[in-house]
Amino acid sequence: MSENKPESGPTVNPRVTWEGCSVLLDINDGDRLVFARLSAGSTLKIGNKTFSLQPLIGCPFGSLFQVESGKEKPYLSRFIPPTEENNVQDEGGCQLQEESRDNRAIIDNNQAQSLTGDDIDAMRREGATGNEIVEALIANSATFDKKTQFSQEKYRLKKQKKYAPRVLLRRPFSRSICEAYFKKYPARIGFLRVDALSLLLSMANVTANSDVLVLDMVGGLVTGAVAERLRGTGSVCNTYLGGTPYPMEIIRMFNFNNEICKRVLRCSVNDLCAVQNETSEQVSQHEDVCTMESQSDEKISLSVSTEEVHLSSKNGVSDLVPENELSTTGKTCKTPKAGEKAPKEAIQSWKENGFSSLIIAAPEQDAWSLVKDLLPLLTYSAPFAIYHQYLQPLATCMNNLQLEKMAIGLQLSEPWLREYQVLPSRTHPCMQMSGSGGYILSGTRAYSNTSQS
Image 1: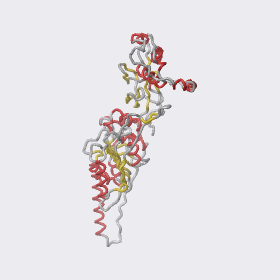
Image 2: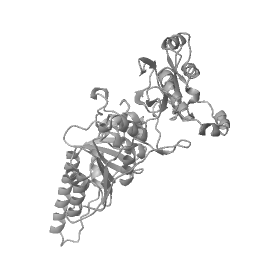
Image 3: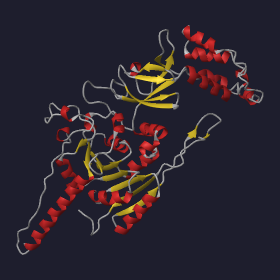
Image 4: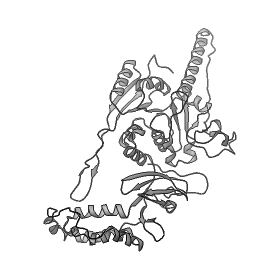
């Protein structure tokens, strides 16, 4: 996956957090996932206590933090897990002992722990750390030594999550964002699983210097994933039906720099089709003129010179920045945001050259009604990929594409993913997994006599 950093100001290490960047906070090994923007005043609530996120600024992504009591108030402290050298040395000697030990004689009657809640509160007032409280609970448990090694690890982890919660600092990119939303709010991204998102990008052949047409109704996740893969080359046209763009708030979490942001543009389907119809009428008129003057030796040639299109923000207003804060000159314009309105030059370039690929992720819309309008905007032999949560809308679309002879190489796929738990002597598939990651219809636009150029 690509890594991005802001372009303005001094050079910033993309592997280290900076003030104002978005981060994904993994609390207690996936028990809770939180997106946050780091600043001096940002906070995080764990349980009934609030912690400042300022200690996270300037730390490498992947750092682990642990809640410490402190004398005045609890705070997040950098935590370095201990090495497992001692465990490796003792592993061989515990094999025989482990075979003869089980949990049959352990009775859960809430009498095994001699340490009371008042004792724990007293330790906290004295400044005891979370790890010290966990060790005290283990030392005062009458059944801990009788448990199997696996049960001891579960007991320790349970107490650690309660008295010494840990926070993992993760970098938000396509995979982590998709996994977080799929786990927490799957309906907001149309139940798009991470393996389906990967297959969607591959089937659409999203590569550098591509002009990708995206109809994204899953919060901007697909648009952000495409822009992340393009890495500031080519362009991403986020199209929409009607006059109101679809929300794409997820793209703000990618920490894109200015070069990537200005490559993400918006344009309605009506505007794209209007330019297409206008150009088609002009081509038809020129063909009539050529037919009437066929007896003349002079040949009429239409040459269109295309220059490099600089996708700047001066020709449109971003949905993330108020209109009065933008200037018409490039010198005084503020930092561009992803989702500017596409300028006429860019729209004309897309019409003349055609889009190199098409991605549709609109679970609430009929797939065929979208494809028949958007597919003619692609250049011939361009790939396309359509995601839907259910099979039947894509099957109907596939049948109509075959009847209209608009595409070839049609393929209807169902991605399949199985997550495994990998631990010593207990590696097996996870007990709870998602049943389906949706379906993807892919193919290649074909030329026919009825195709609109």
